[in-house]
Amino acid sequence: MLNMSTENNSEHLFKNSVKILTDLISFKTISGEDNNSLIDYCDDILKKIGASSFRTFDDDKKRVNLFSTIKAKNPSNKKPIIFSGHTDVVPVSKGWSTDPFIATIKNNKLYGRGSCDMKGFIACTLAFAPIYSETNLDRDIHFSFTFDEETACQGAPILIEELKKRNITDGICIIGEPTNMKIIDAHKGCYEYTTYFEGLAGHSSAPNKGVSAVEYASRYVNKLIELRERLVERAPKDSIFDPPHSTLSIGGIFGGIAHNVIADKCHVNWETRPVVKEDAIFLNKELDKYANEILLPEMIKIYPNSSIKKKIIGEIIGFDREAKSDACELISSLTGDNSRQVVSFGTEAGLFQEIGISTVVCGPGSIEQAHKIDEYIILDELKKCLKLLNGIKDKSSFN
Ligand SMILES: [Zn+2]
Image (cartoon, rainbow, N blue to C red; front, top):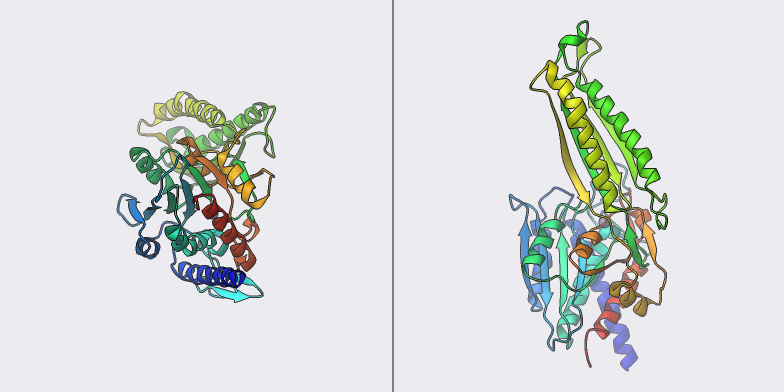
């Protein structure tokens, strides 16, 4: 009989997580868009079971982070658990076989934008939340749902500031990005920039009377390529990454209107993926020095209003491997997976790690399906995730 009811329970849990995932996919929370209704939906589920929550916002309150807590009934010295997921999804392009915002199940796969990246994880935690609230918890369980992770982690830093103010700087954080429930304990940083050049337009027959933004931008790009070689030389000997060094890439150069016009405007999109934070500092220092001490004075000599402005699009700090990680050990003890892997995509992990929270990236679904047409999650992955959440329950109660 006991087995029967456990069976029924897990079947009920699974069905509920699919239902919640279906609801979550129906909210079109593309990065940059209003995500209030999705956050209200999550907050309602958590409030009904007695969780307390607070929200943090962007400047015009269009986009929201939610942080919600089920308090320990019998507090112990165990570190609190934080389940962390981003609520935004990447935009959809044409070519989907189904409506990307209507969850569709076919052959044990659930299709929909965000199904694996990463509303599947959020759905599992929300489906499991009522069980945590009925458990004699001996540590707090937190739910952290952020906005705009996909656009260089814009939401999470606002939440992290609030966590610092509230002294929530200790704990074990599980970032449920799709890893097929494997343990990821490190990734490079991802720093994106756009640099704007403004010079003076003029007739191409008199180049000395104008300031070509395109030409100065080209020299800037050459400097970037030169610095890229330095990054290769700086590769740490014991690097765990492939390639072992920090990378740098020019994503685009945009400027000019005609063959016979000196371009007054040009901008360069570029990014770097540092293996250590120091590389990003080195690169920016050298580059800014070149722009401000070499390029800009030359431009200003001809046209005083010339400018070079570097805009930070996002600086996702890296996630560093730690010799001993409470977060990794917790997952290993529950799933039996003792491997530790690195990935090439960025997450919010480094932000939590930076304030002292032991962090691991581990969640249902595969990154192979993320950001693609016909994104899906294999339903069994949700079951594996629910099993992990059940194991965390057993490790968070004393009866
Ligand atoms: Zn993601």
